[in-house]
Length: 379
Image (cartoon, rainbow, N blue to C red; front, side, top):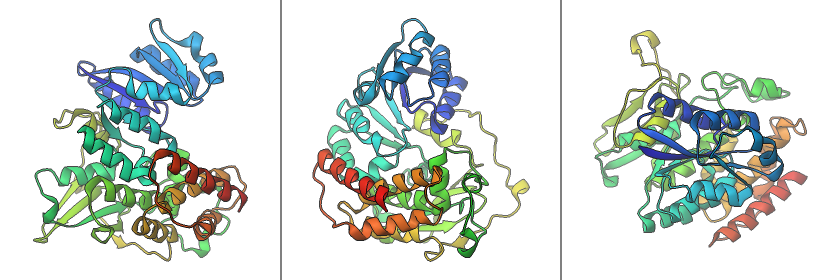
């Protein structure tokens, strides 16, 4: 049985990962679960899957869950506890489904332990792609993408060589406001922004989808995962989210990966790679879908996408600042402190105040991350 540790088990990716595991109980064993403050759901998961270890974000949450756990499950908390869940439970595969840059140290710890990474925490590569990919190569650790777009690209590239790739095309649903003009975004509500037409996701990633920051982060992640230049990466709007991404080769052949918008498909592929098993998701019927639509990415309509490409091309500390400032801006929007369009204003102003530097280690990354967060909180 393959032993699985899930960082962020109570979030959207974490719960769907456990759904896939439950469909194949003879193939997988859950050895560790981590969560933030949703202690009731974590306790339910622990009683069902009986992991060796659960890790909570802080001592208070750990105390609330301690009496709800099954016998034999040990509890830890804080960053050290999450790192232990990532690197010291005998896992064969760690699903990193934490939201934000807090996933960096646990991911690096798992790599140091030689554990395969199922990466759903794109911020890890956005903020520290140079460190993570270098160390993974040195330790001969596979990083398997869990995001639907990167899983699609990964599958399209199976059996191919990088020199044969002309470009990678990442598809975007367009988010909650894809049919609105910029003028129609004035005064949109939190509830409207969280109403994604295709996917059921957490609040932060749903807002990022509406601003197109999420797709910008995916562009930077793709650069690191697949070793492609930013000139080889393109984004197009595909409202149906049926083609999850595709690759065009130098002979103009295109290989695409299709499926209904259900994250259990890419999650399971990361869990079972290189094999494929039956999946609890529903099959795609193209005759029922009938029509697929596409339109080019409009950088003026989605200025956050333009910022992401610019930060990726500049490199150094720019992607770290972009990501950190966005996390703060989205949190402020969800609290009602700023408007939806203020998210991009905050990003623009933080980037204007930032002087790009090279980040040689995790400490330098965390210091730059902290500067960006502080600056974004004041704008």
